[in-house]
Image (cartoon, rainbow, N blue to C red; front, side, top):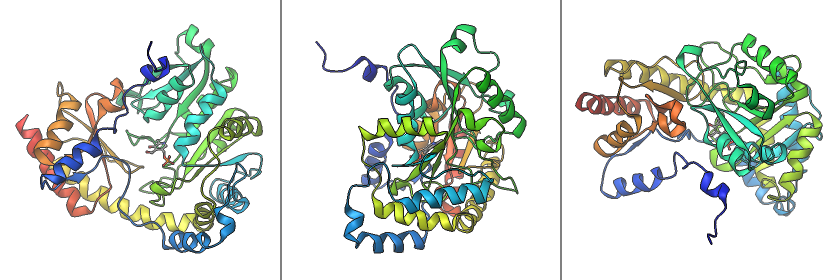
Amino acid sequence: MTWFSKRLAALPSYPMAEIPAVKRRLLAQGVDVIDLGAGDADFAPPELAVETLARAARDPAMSRYPFQLGLPTFREAAAAYLQRRFGVRVDPFTELHPLIGSKEGIAHLAMAVLDPGDVAVVPEPGYAVYEGATVLAGAQPYRRALTPRTNFLLELADLPADTLRRTKLVYLNYPNNPTAAIAPRDYLERTVEFCRRHRIVIAYDNPYCEITFDGYVAPSIFEIPGAREIAVEFHSLSKTFCMTGWRLGWAVGRPELIAALARVKNYVDTGAFLAVQAAGAAVLAQAETLAQGYVARFQERRDALLPALHAQGFEPDTPGATMYVWVPLPEGLASDAFARRALTEAGVVTLPGSGFGAGGEGFFRLALTVSTPRLVDAAERLGKVLAAV
Ligand code: PLP
């Protein structure tokens, strides 16, 4: 008899799981490693966040259990941000819920919605948690390829009839990780309409909504008519405000879905540290201004890396959003083999497209997480690997 569950065996390997160990080994050997792997930029979090956290941590009330209510001012600050930024008005107590990072909510929503036999449609390439959460909920992921031919948009219209009948959840993520694609409004309109018609819940994963360039402004799914009936949107402080380790985000959506998520969470966590929620509330009160500062710096990095990659023979499109560059490889070159050589021969951590599901093959992802000179250095090193393969 095995100790382990069938769902554990069904989990795909987590794409970034081994990288920290390999990186540590290389660093111990004295290799100058440039890490463009995880979406975890090296910018400091806002001073306002640090100061508020330090102050809040001295208040003994902040050390109590947060429970699912969390800090009311965090809920209110998140709701006020949604209204200012997207014109979306929600009740902070019934339509919004604090999360210990958006990953946690994305995973737990699956448990609230899916049963064995149900299907969740997941993008491939895509954030690994969509598929993992579906498997952990005992349901079946149905992978939809995101390809340049469809501008990396996840299309539902031609799902096989049997799959469509069993589909209860679809994960959408625009601006997209890893392809950096953005979703035009007409795409969102027809997708919401389709999901309403088929009673499919949309998990709209929106952690990159502020990291946009060249005048593009990313929407909330709730700007689309009808979305409030079927969507849950996930927001995060991780990427926009360089607070990945703080673990703070929120879910927003119709009260029944939010209550279902909260019900699952009651049994697995007791909420994000209240002092972190206090810091989050302070940051969200100035979200747009703070975001602008980071975005300008991401854009500077993007604008340095793209020409450097092109000079080395790579042909990525210029990302209009996110902190990622999705780089196509020459025909026939396996992304896993390329990423391995990039790491061991050039000391550059990249993520192979295949790590985001088989549909990501033929690409690798770079994250704008280090300084401009280091990015240019990385492009040159990657160019040497490309020339040698
Ligand atoms: N969704 C996407 C598409 C991501 O890329 C990430 C992080 O990489 C997350 C969600 C999770 O972010 P967090 O849990 O830090 O809020």
